[in-house]
Image 1 (cartoon, rainbow, N blue to C red):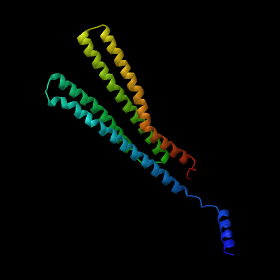
Image 2 (cartoon, helix red, strand yellow):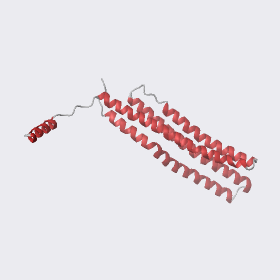
Image 3 (tube, rainbow, N blue to C red):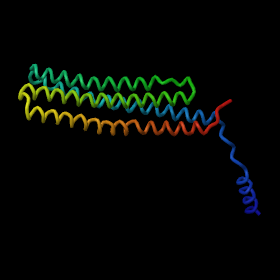
Image 4 (cartoon, one colour):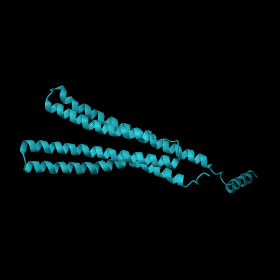
Length: 199
């Protein structure tokens, strides 16, 4: 008898439809996901930023042994290049942080994706520019010491190869760095598009 009662209850539960999730609850869930992506992207940029600070310190250690014009120029140049990268990352992090949530979710998603894409482009441009400047300095030094000829041509080809490599490797890096966040936002947009617009 107890088994029959249990079976009847189970069949009745199977016939009943689960109550639908309210649209407002789904919107809140998507908004929390978008906010989480924003926070994780900001933390990733801050970690990337702090990873360059030890390199600047290493560039300045040469001045502890002997201060010469060459070492001073090298230290200032390295610190300046790293400073540009740090400034780009800091500006990108602040731009992502300033994306407001006082508008529609579609607008928030668009603004956040735009901020991530701008951060990727700026980081790649700064990274490649750093290699380009190193290449220009190398060509200038070789040209000043050796003059026009085989060594200058070799230095130029080496500089071009370094810039090409930096672009390829840097593009792959920023794609991996920001791709996961763009993919999450794309999934949020798909969930949002599956919901009917509130009337």
